Image 1 (cartoon, protein in one colour):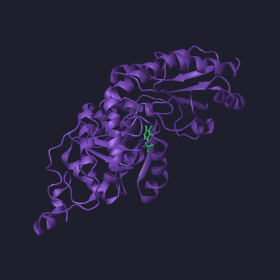
Image 2 (cartoon, rainbow, N blue to C red; image 1 turned 90 degrees about the horizontal axis):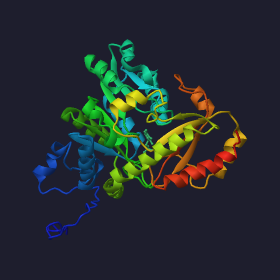
Image 3 (cartoon, protein in one colour; image 1 turned 45 degrees about the horizontal axis):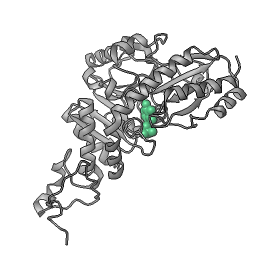
Length: 380
Ligand SMILES: *Cc1c(COP(=O)(O)O)cnc(C)c1O
């Protein structure tokens, strides 16, 4: 028999409970028959989460200054959920060329095959986006700054155009995080975070979130999450909540270090461009200054000349930068994006190969001396 009193024992702690369930048990025939009425917030089946997922959603919504939040198993799932909930065949979808690669691939190879009119636009289009609006434009996707090439988008200008034409907006806010930018406060409809990055913070899980204010859209998102089978693990929800406890402190440290390292790199003769909007030399600096209250821990740069062998030697010489994708963890990381990838974009920001650094919790001076010695392998 199930213990109906299992939760009535006097117990409290500082950490949230991990509730596991596929089956949710009902008190009566009537309650079971009416179970669907418990959505979008309540519990009727494990697919929409247990109180553990709901607690994580409550905490993320608080950070985002949002009324509602839906968590899903990855940042990519959060991007897909936002689009799939609202875009249908016959609709026109505008996607910034700075958006996450897998979202662009999904749009190109799936949505476009399902009669969605997919159109990429230059990230720095600003209010010029009005010229691209069609009668069937349904949604504008933004990512600012773009997390490989770091273009800043004028979110306020794009949102103003979208509102005028009744178009929904979504913004991938992973770089800034709600600590430095709150999309909903700027009128964006859906704020996306890859919680895999700064929220989780330890390179050991995947999670994504969509935060929003509209109760009507929240019901649609919750149903879509359920129908697409995007259920999250309660253990992973717990780990993201643990990550959130230290997230502001980690990001403060990592963002200060990232700025210091960007400033160092900008002065090195081997480096071409440092792509990082917190630097005054960056073309997106004014917008960054206007919109954001801090910088993320992720920066990119190009080398002055293209040289595969020298790149390989540079990566090998680094002692504190393991090579890998993803970012936002406690350990610094280095990643590489070949020139061909940039040249294949519809709207390129640079034709050159990109090296991307995620700055972790290590001492920034140690990281700078590591970069300094590795740059010596490159020569001048
Ligand atoms: C990593 C990332 C994603 C995807 O998140 P996953 O959890 O890895 O699927 C989406 N957007 C941005 C900006 C990211 O950096």
